[in-house]
Image (cartoon, rainbow, N blue to C red):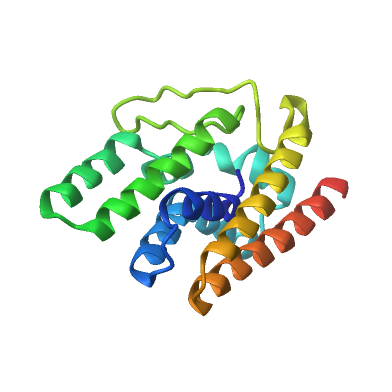
Length: 191
């Protein structure tokens, strides 16, 4: 799934209360597994000036990038973080790690060629799903419609649930960023 979809769906599952103390770790936890991808793209596109086709066909699969990305998608490492948070009675840590694990649960069945090593660094195994959230060769065009619908429904439900300006602003920003990202993706796919 795209990062904004993770944010909205994680908020729907974990952040039904509009308190900033709940929203913040859920949103950060929804973003963290994808954060290395943003850095990867920035380095490759902006700093190295790598062509788009090379970024996604070659650079993404470089071992050092894969290790960096998979650290943030590691179920065992996040599970250890969750156990530490539980041990210290940190509700923020529990929400953060829980949101990261929920993100991974959403990604696991939706990555084919770009599957993560979710048990890294203990295993290099990848679950290559027959479904991809983006690749039309693996039903990405169908899943994209499902994702858009899920995000729209989730945003409507969350907007009605949250009464505070902070909660509604968060949902509005996520919905707006999702729309912009989706528009960019459509343009990139068609070029």
